[in-house]
Image 1 (cartoon, rainbow, N blue to C red):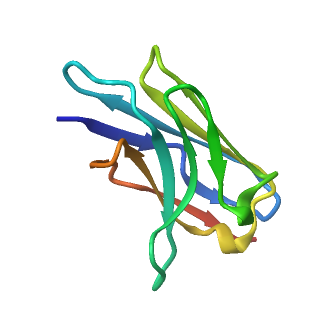
Image 2 (image 1 turned 180 degrees about the horizontal axis):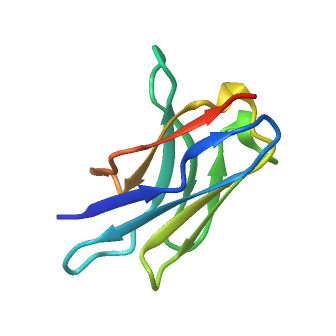
Image 3 (image 1 turned 30 degrees about the horizontal axis):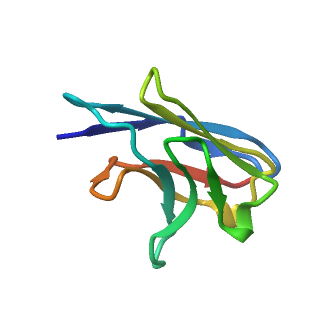
Length: 112
């Protein structure tokens, strides 16, 4: 079993920045792809960025150049640095570990 704890969300003005963290814990935790997803009100959850165990990254087009995903394997933690935030980035951001485990989500609200 893997537990994921996300943190770092909040209310920020347009153009601002946030850094989300996702800490994974569990026994005999394998190193797996970690990803960030988001779900805005009345919209489907979408993949935002992912990072493989070797560090290869993927970004959805709408966040390229503004979001940076990284990880610290020693800490079993993934990060999402979000810059130049826009109101349309407002959503609950979820961390995913491998294909089966999800965090509880952290709210990001972009408003002036």
